[in-house]
Amino acid sequence: MRPDYTEIMSRVVIIGASIAGHTVAVSLREKNKDCAITLISEENCPLYDKRRLFEILAGNSGGKDIFLAGENFYNDRDISFLKERKASLINTEKKTVSFKDRPAKEALEYDFLVICSGRRFVLPEIPGIRKEGVFKFYSFEDARRFSGRLNLAAEVCLIGSNELALKIAGVIASRQKEVRLISPGTLSALSAPEGVEAVNSQVTEIIGESEVLGIRLKEGKIIGTSAVCFIEDTKSNIEFLKGSGIEVKGDFVSVDGCMRTNLGNVFAAGAVCLSKDSAGRMKSWNEAINESLLLVDNLVKVI
Image (cartoon, rainbow, N blue to C red; front, top):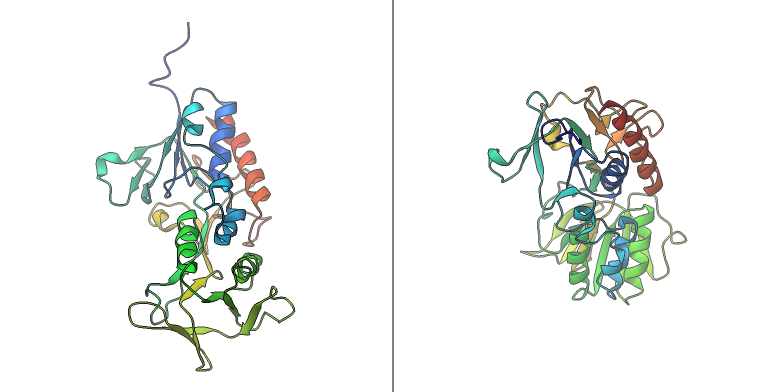
């Protein structure tokens, strides 16, 4: 006779539903049919390929083809998928996760917690940064909103020198927009995509009344623009860990070789965590997947 698992099944809560969290949820379900799995996302959609977010800016498909899971994907695998939930507090003594703008009674209880909340691009603290027309490039919604702005903007300023910034600049330039790629001393005309002007400087102010009309550089020069997007500085999504007792080193969750934190029932994987091998560098899509699979191998041993 099959035992009643309603009282004894382990509850696994995964914070973050990008490729790391998704991989943990799906792989764990494949290896353990009886634990209760809850996958939490700040966004209102299932998994999409973040490597292809820049394609939305081409203005063709609206990004529908970058989704990797349908609305019923998790339900079909007996995984509870909670959308538009932003974790605000972890109580490791009570083993609960609380959410921003949600009543305390909606806090989730867990036996095992997995942190896959990732990193995001952030806006610098400079005058005018909250004006309409200023964007960061982190989520599907960010890309969708920025794409909408591009339909009206003739001049665009991108701040960044990484591979993603170069891809975005190239896509926007292909739409016959005037594009400037701004970074402090790391770009050259040769490295910038065709049709993109490389500017080695730093933005110190966003000019305009309620919306962007231009930017001021550290030398005092003003460049006219109606859209500004920051694709440079990143920060881990770990604000909810404050006071939890989960060890953080710098801006990352610290994990051991088993992807376990300093607490035996809390694990982490992907861009948010720091292991000996990663040493704080940006991780690839496949590295996040491999970490998640390693995490699951070790998690199933302790459930």
